[in-house]
Length: 301
Length: 296
Image 1: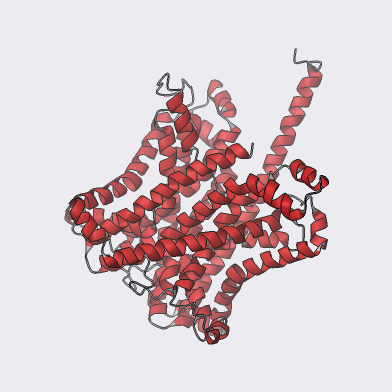
Image 2: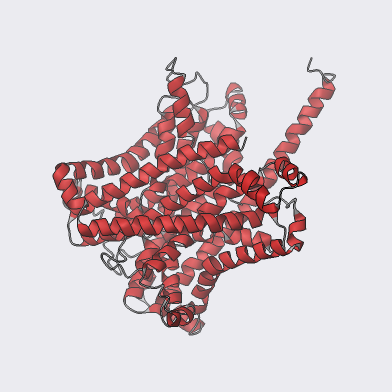
């Protein structure tokens, strides 16, 4: 959250106003105008046309359904992974730990197209596991499992990177105390760890979900872009655009943009919650310190 | 306000090299769950990160050095790298400058609507790139809201490199802002105030006192913006027209090769792109340590 600016005199000066105008113009021109135009264009022909484009086109309906089934699976997998990996990295020390932390960042830096290509090289017809997968009768590339894999890859870092700083900041004391009092691993996890990390976890899941629903490049490569079968919502937007059906494309895009705004709202609410709780924690800790000092006569003895 | 979490690979790695005395498997601890968390983590990381990237590299390596060069260094590929790197570098530069401006205004100036502006900065992080591409393309074609104004002036944004740069600025701007913002917030004002008291002008104070202190953060923001822009695919395909040798970026070339079933060539180009991306990842990590050390 931004701190109250200490140099408040600036807002009244000419320089201050110029800077504000420049910043607002920057964000307005680059971010707000494009975002607003999605909604304008989507509803340009009226709400009925907007609804028609979404509900009465079977390929679009399928795309919506596909996005809604692929994204949650990817988020679920990455939530489990994120919790396990954060626990491992934050609570234990072992050789290779730093390398592992860097590996978490790799999906962030790799182009999604490269990720999709790697999956095709593994599961495609001529790929490493291609014959195996075909023998099993499972379709990965050009099918739902491939979409899930690609989406899971690109959202991999999002939950774990949220959890590690929080778990390191909180420290293992409470969990150690629980273990010493006889709690089982599961009890420690559900009663101590999870409540402590719940907001950071939620924050990560919200970000992962937004990313999962919007992923384009990796899914494009892996899906074969088959309308009505493997097109997610973002791919549907592109296909409609290629077919010169821009109003329909805008309608689907407006749903995605609306979801993005909901994501931002949820994110802001969660961040406020985190900040409130960390302030309460600080307050509690300083109270305990003060009480400690008073009790021991102020010299720690 | 959202913060981008950091990786602390570089300093820990270097420190452990220097202080390499004991190798303990793990700190003796009674905390449960090492086995299970290690199993889940290794399984996922191996299957989802290590194996795919290894397959890519090995497949490209199987070409042999001449084969690899023949595939990855064709004239069309070279043009694609140039467009990708050039547009990304330019976009990252613009994002860094504008990002510094916006971060400054958000941190140093109080004005109505500041919280809204702060929240809006995150929009490109949440918005699907396909939507961004669609919208930018629609805005800047001849009949678009902004195209109507710009095309008569001779400024073609759609189907041009300018459009690529613009769209890359959109996706990379939040990175530049969010890296500099916390550093600006935690900057101690004493030195600044001392400089002003001693008679320095605002410009002098900014150039000599503030900017050197935030420069590592600005540089990190630039690197992160660059990394983000290099990998971008979804938004660029809408606006660039994807013309080989002119507006084709490397990821588009990879997909194009894939669609023609030229897997080997696609893999070779992908490995080049991967190499550049990983190099930037390490640079960013190193820079983030500089930032963290300076902020203390």
